[in-house]
Length: 113
Image 1: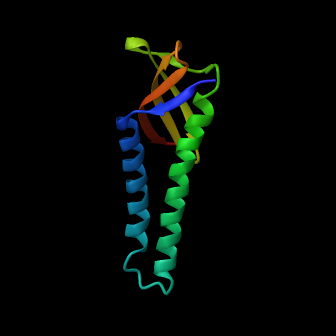
Image 2 (image 1 turned 135 degrees about the vertical axis):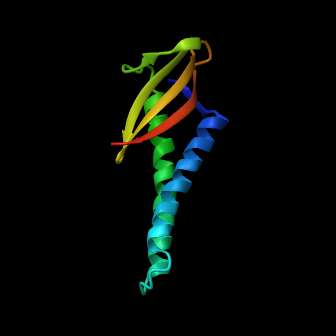
């Protein structure tokens, strides 16, 4: 089993994606004059937090396993793999430290299915 770590760049990318994801719904439901507008917006805020947690948990669930079968070798001993979460494919670049059993998630890209 591997320990999974996230680089600052990957954390910032995930945070930026979630922020953008939430703003889409805030823009759609702000100033609509819908009676329960505040409740709707709060539900979307909560869902975005849950989605962020699901992203981290899904990445950790896949990358802590001893062997990743589907990956592409890149330069500098990096690898690229992908996972699907909801309506998004996440392309993930990572580095393996086999000696210390650590995988460092270096980049995350989000692509709508």
